[in-house]
Length: 335
Ligand SMILES: [Zn+2]
Ligand SMILES: [Zn+2]
Image (tube, rainbow, N blue to C red; front, side):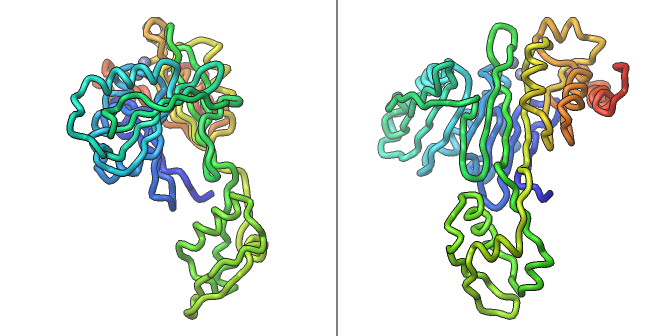
């Protein structure tokens, strides 16, 4: 399957958590947590449309100010999802700066916190010194926080000591695969029109919609959507990537992770301690590398990436990765 999501752990396995996911053909990106973001260019930061925050511990949120500073004078909206309490935390954070020279700035931060009764939305417009505005409650079914025709994000709450840390799955509803050989047979040239074609398929548009298709011999031809759908493309299960971090090593969490990550194409999961340090992992409310690998295996994930390694193992850089891989490949004993 051709990737539509290009995920990247901004700070590698040992740095602050931040998963930057570039959305192919869209010039947009999503961020899962925003620890230190200095390794992203301003151009990459500006592509961010939605930020999904697992919880507000400082290592997951410290990069927010750089994001805000980059967006501030732009005519853009940044949408941020997170657990209960986030809107008040962001209000307090924004209040910590002086905003007397931002009159007329169009930028808005919209915070949506997930509560048992739905999603509470609070908007913070730069032009009004980031005072909270326009509060409303949005219904939320089955943890599905955010839906577009191209992807949806679902969350489950995990226990991280006595607070909630959200885990997220990013799913493409349907994957539209283009058959290159069919394009050649019809003499259709590749190009941005294929992106529009995929959008129309995913949106369930009128099959009689005409597309202007560029031809390899030059010129263009109007072709109905239904003809293209029949001859140049097929659909299959969409791509799924899952992000799990900061959770206590307990069965209630394991069950929720397995349900969220079932058959994921990629599971990105914290592996903080070696399993021989399980007591410490319990005390600090994090997973061991062994548990991360086992969970990836049991969920049937096709690929696994581990991160959020404790600095205590920095003198043996690959050891957590090795332990997680051993569990993922079915070894019976931790390192
Ligand atoms: Zn953390
Ligand atoms: Zn934490």
